[in-house]
Amino acid sequence: MTDLWWKSAVVYQIYPRSFADADGDGMGDLRGIIDHLDHLAELGVDVIWLSPIHKSPQDDNGYDISDYQDIDPLFGDLATFDELMTAAHSRGLKLIMDLVVNHSSDEHPWFVESRSSKDNPKRDWYWWRPARDGMEAGTPGAEPTNWGSAFGGPAWEYDKETGEYYLHLFSPKQPDLNWENPEVRAAVYEMMRWWLDRGVDGFRMDVINMISKVLPLEDGRLTAGQAYADGSAGYINGPRNHEFLHEMYEQVFAGREGLLTVGEMPGVTVDEAIRFTAQDRQEVDMVFQFDHVWADRGGDPWRIFPLQLTVLKGIFGRWQAGLAEEGWNSLYWNNHDQPRVVSRYGDDSPEFRAASAKMLGTVLHLHRGTPYVYQGEELGMTNYPFASITDFRDIEALGQFRQATEIEGREAADVLTVLRARGRDNARTPMQWDDSPNGGFSTTTPWLAVNPNYPQINAKAERADPDSVFHYYRQLIKLRHEEPAVVDGDFTMLLPNDERLYAYTRRLNETELLVIGNFTGETVEAEIDGWAGAELVLSNLPANGLTMAPWQTVVYRRATT
Ligand code: GLC
Image (cartoon, rainbow, N blue to C red; front, side, top):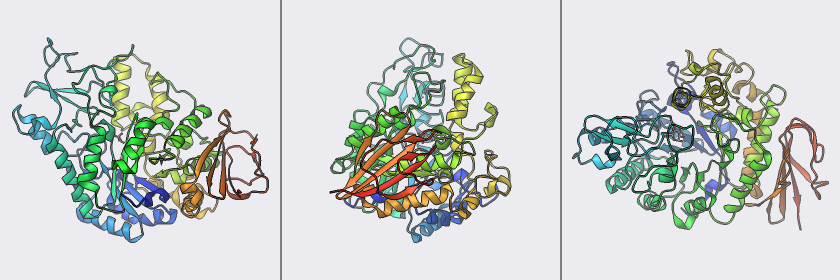
């Protein structure tokens, strides 16, 4: 891809089941998205990324696909999808799809065939293995490796019919596809071409740095107190990952223009990301790395480690420097797997919610890279006040809770504290459109409760208030579109050892921008020279030079010589 239009673009992620329910079944749908496209056009974003809408048993809310070339009836049908795509394109919005091909659903016809017998031609499309040597198949500990799955329990499921196990890094209903098999790859590429021919503008590739496994599959490191091992050394950035993505590029993307590809890559390093995104290597345009959203995680998964701003700055600084010459960053705080950033790294109290949401947006968006806005982030939506485990719907929260409390002997209250802060359902509560019942999301009880703060925090109120988070995000997006230094400027981190202020400059030719964010509820003086008299470009509160009020952010511009 030679045309790098996405460097100045902003992407908006829609989680369809929680965006807007037009048919009144409590679940968002494609018609609901069509009805709300004007919200996105007004916000000013360039691209929509849709989380999966394919046919699916919905074990992991659609990340378990049973037909890659059809729409789940929950969301609509192909005709409505085409209508959505046309409506988006007519507003100048591109549309990218989620591509979930590390695994399929166990109800996908490929897997149904694969499990039917050991000599089925599709047997080798998935990872089948016999029990561990000397162990009786189906007994505890007989799994082929000691790996845990992401959602609790072992990463292997025993299949009585054929007496073997299949690998599932996620739920047992998400068997991993065997990318070593060229037929699998050819089938995936064909499906991708079918979507592109239909008119979609690219893909967000789910856990795409897990498709190449290290052979032979071997036991991982077991940590004391944990029931299963971390097997990630056996499947993160495996030996053929680059080869597979380059092959995909050649088979699917070569010769097509105007597309965007982004690989979701938990555990990816800066050096690997350079290799994945350097344009001349022809793999993907950008990756989602996780270091900055794991900045508040420590060794113990069931403890909260308060954010240290210097750690966060160290991470961003490394990624900005690493991908400065070759490759490209994507920038995100939120998606359907992360808690709401204003609750996580900001202050979601009524006093500081809006200010800290705007500050976090500013600090993120003005880095070098392509920003992603997750639905509701532009309203400063917050985490949900979960009272008990029965309030959660997410397979990850429920599975991990079970493993931690029932097998690993953790206190339920401790586990709940962490899930409340980190659980994925925080991001998945319905979009808050207005102050009518269910936040205007649906006319009936939604599949997951609406955050009770919807009468105060909703799109209608924010659209009417020029001082809202929504209108601030519009300015932020406009700034990327209009100021070349935001897109192409180089990046310099300032005050790396300061625990309270996040500050950096961006410079392109004679233009230099200074961005500062106060990550505290106190007034802090920024000790940065040379900016007296500079032009104020953006601020969430009345600006007073470099004196930063609680959660304040400022952006200044000056000409350099
Ligand atoms: C990705 C998705 C997540 C899903 C998992 C398995 O991390 O973002 O929602 O559960 O992959 O597909």
